Image 1 (cartoon, rainbow, N blue to C red):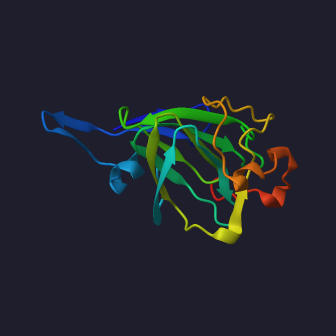
Image 2 (cartoon, rainbow, N blue to C red):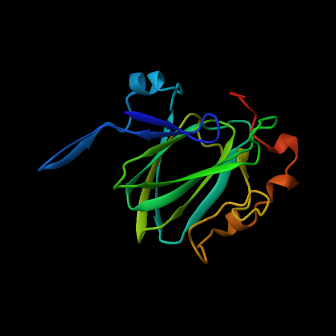
Length: 186
C-alpha cells in the first residue's frame, strides 16, 4: 500500500496493493491494521454507495455535531473528488484539494473529520463507495455551495447536474462558527 500526502494535512491518497493476472485483479479495499499503520486510525461505522451520471456534482457536504471521516473510492467509472478544510483555526481553512479517482487507478482518498466533501462524475456513470466514521444524521447536515467563488474549486465539468438542495447551500464565508463541524482532530 502506498500513501501519498497532499497539500492539506490529514488528507491522504491511498494506493492499495493490487494483484493482477490473466483472470483480472484482487485488492483489499480496507484492512484495519494496515490502515492504522498508515495513519488512518478511525473506526468506520457506515458504508455508503452512490450511483451518479456524467456531469453530476454532489456536495459540498458535512455534518456539524457528528463529523465524519471518510475513506472513499470508485468502483466503476471516474470522478473528481474534492475535500475542503472547514476546521476553524486550521492553517488551511477554506483551502481545497482534489484528486481523480477511478476504477482504473484504484486510488482511495482519506478525508478526516472537519472537511466538506464533494465530487463530480467524469465518466458516463460512476459507482462511488465510502466508509464513514459516524452515522448519517439527517438533522445534522451542513453544506457549502459547490461553486463558492472564495474557495475556487476548479471543477472539470461544464453545466453540472446538481440537486435542488445542493444549489441552496451558502458560501463558506456566510456560515457562523457554530454552523461548522465540531472538531475532533484539530
